[in-house]
Length: 197
Ligand SMILES: [Fe+2]
Image 1 (cartoon, rainbow, N blue to C red):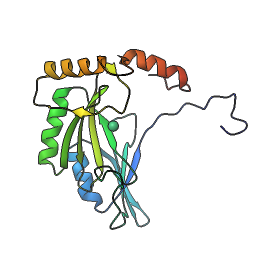
Image 2 (image 1 turned 90 degrees about the horizontal axis):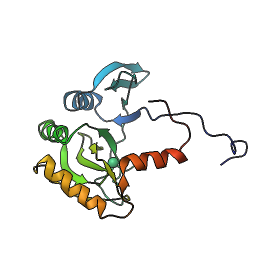
Image 3 (image 1 turned 30 degrees about the horizontal axis):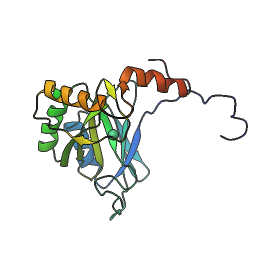
């Protein structure tokens, strides 16, 4: 903590958007619109830079910005090449396991590659690479918390009831188990003031 900020808590802030540099802005915009359902909210040129703004939340003018200018031959992540070399993952929250299955189908037909699934205890996740290799994740929150990282295989072909039962049992038998409501109220205590919901 730097001098002068010691006793004052940081001002409110909330994560809003990310900008991705692409090789083919149009192809990437098509993927995020057609497969993920983003809406282009504005687009244009800024000097030599093509800029596409997109969102799925009217509260945010843009959640993703795409521009051109991606260098060729970006090195792979040196620990696990599935993850991005700089942006490790870009993740989207979904309401239900049915939505995750729906998204899996959309990714399969929409040009994504490397589709995998995992249970994290506090979330069920679907992963894939977008057309330019960015690692994207779709997840559904569970009602439980267990210490992270927590990663076990997830079979989305099982019924919701089976998945829920299996994950809850795993969480209850894992270190740090608590309800997600308890975890949220505990972590809120140590975070600076949050935007009102
Ligand atoms: Fe994640």
